[in-house]
Image 1 (cartoon, rainbow, N blue to C red):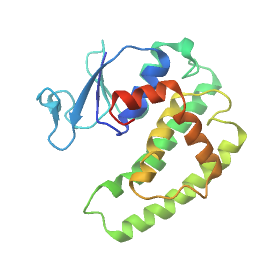
Image 2: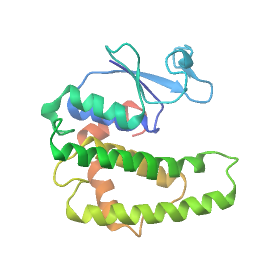
Image 3: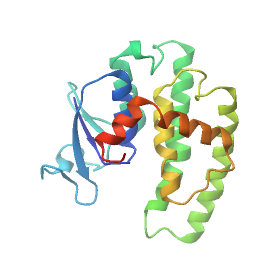
Length: 201
């Protein structure tokens, strides 16, 4: 399998899941500005939308969208426990978190990375993030991870997205459970391995 990624982008979640599951993947670095791979290939020929993660596996076409790629990878090694089995109510709880992270956190962070975003929009997004993170912080009081004692694909995605808080100067000090979560996930060997492989450690 081949994972197209950009260092520190949301593709890091897929990279972490692959490492947690012990899946061997070929990493292909993408310059998101030029849409060129590290080998000079046109990334738009792989993913016309031009964003990562993009996973090329045995399927007829690449697997895209962060919340889907992490599930696909987790399902390749179900014994790793990163996604509960199909039909298990626990699976839908993990999928619920993946959807929440994608729509309520990932998309709310996105405007901070666009220079043309008006200050009013950034202020509104900061307020929304504070509200949404208050919800996450409360849920993390029930266990070390989002769905309890087991690390799942949703935790990898959450950790990746919340790592952007430092980049955009969003203070997480008001959320002690989130801070604990961030430190705990950062110490996982699979996470450290992904950071080293992306040149972020």
